Length: 446
Image (cartoon, rainbow, N blue to C red; front, side, top):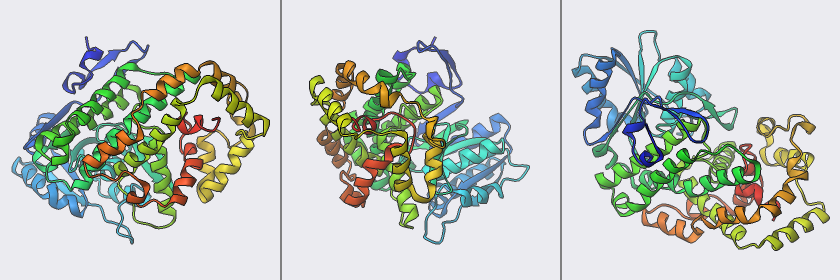
């Protein structure tokens, strides 16, 4: 019987189902995870064992050289039929998980292909995950850099019509993470993976806020698994900064545990909160302005520092101060009614506002629950000590920034390349990227 004590391990959960104390049954569809030096060689062996005789390797021009050619040779030596799909960048030199790239991959999936292999980092995995699910093919993961926690997850964050949304898809059947390959990753990609993990401090706290204030379903097993993965990374920060194989092992294990935690609950709540909403907002605004994309994990790390500042401010407020702040807002009419939310979304999102309105249940003015306008203020005051405890457990913004500096990652929006005006916009509008309660929404009352 699996238990929370095993949440820091990967192998016991593979291919398993568990009746959880949260009241739900969880299952992990991933069958095999190899995190080791020389892991590439294990892929053709596994494919043969599973009876997959024809594979499609999906790469871009960089991952083709990093691992694609070697994997192609290994598969051919094992007498497997294998072909390559080299995803091409757009006119701006960008490779985004959008309609253009999705169609490009779909056109390369012949009827004979039995398994599609993502050879790359976040974008390639998101596209392969979606296409594998839609075309009913097995999905293998070969990370070429430990840059994101999405390798093991089930959701595919895609850009559809300029809006970043997560589409339910499938987890990989197997993951092959070669430590010798990962140790050669650019330092910026390693720092990005660490930044993605550091964001779990605020995403987990956001999830707890939803549970405390709205009774949102919360799974301690998934939360503990995410915390264990985060601890692996923080405890081995020097090895990660050095890019050693031990550091890559711990970072990759942490990223994988985070992905499995999302698999358990069927959504990204354990690993994605307000810090991801800022990241997605920045990404969408960059797309609208036709600017070069920023690394996902780098954005998440910087955004987590911003969220930690909000948590610090909330933790410093007494129950009396919160009651006073809420009363003052109500007296001057400075509360978010459905009408004002619609106006903000239309102002902040422009051409993609309709999609954001739909995400927030605002396609019809009266569609939104009125609890936030009528019940939440009193609930905030009554439950403030529990809220304050959640806030106080988040490390300080300076602690998070110091950790990012140790891995040579950006810590400020200026270092990242996000202007103060965009930061200001994101603090006002990014909370609408997902219809989830976060520290940003809490601060609308403080």
